[in-house]
Image 1: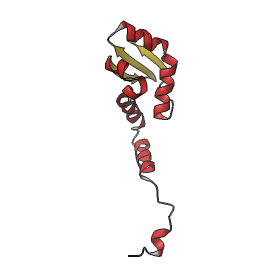
Image 2 (image 1 turned 90 degrees about the horizontal axis):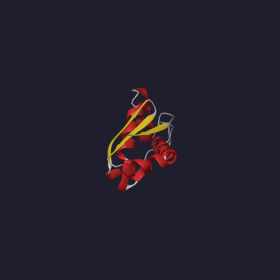
Image 3 (image 1 turned 180 degrees about the vertical axis):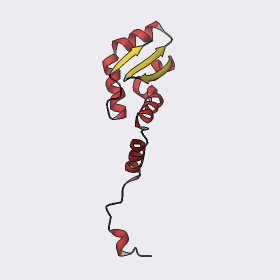
Length: 104
């Protein structure tokens, strides 16, 4: 069955699903919560499996990433790599969500 002539012509109202979801997140002010949950879910990819297994809690408050770990060795490793981790987190999200990291 051949497509009709008007089906082939894109209109101005045509947007992709990605654009529609992004507009929806911005309209309902859910962008920041979505980005924070994305960081928490991608933590093992961002930091690596060894440190991710020893991470007890992760949350973002006032543009600060709080990370609670169970070991002093892991805490020292995170403190040494603070700038790199903040950069990776913001790169994962695609915008600046975290400006500082606090290791607990």
